[in-house]
Image (cartoon, rainbow, N blue to C red):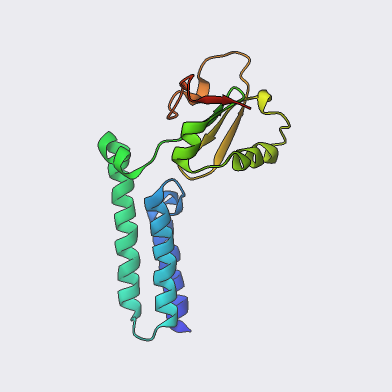
Length: 167
């Protein structure tokens, strides 16, 4: 019980010191760190073969690696491209982008569900649906002012005409 309390306290302290970015869900590396922290905590709590000091050291190593990757990624475009995917345009102005759907392994039904979850009944009322780097969908209503707005840095924007299929 003492080891459990101390291990839990160590994780909380490390996460507070390392900042919000450590447990974000921005990319695959963030996901791996989150899972690894949980797995390490479980090992420390459940295995008598893993001393508290080794578990805390493992926490520190994971948090430091995450911090270094985030730090490098925020300063280097090359590192950023290596560790982070780009958002992908899946639907644009009422048209599904078939190539993007296949490449991202997303079904039209998943896009429809994301649209419904935003309370939108017709796809024609949308400017775009974007698959974000964390796997979530952004549903963007039609922009009456025109222009790329927040779509300027999305992979596949503007879409190619031949790859689009009318709904």
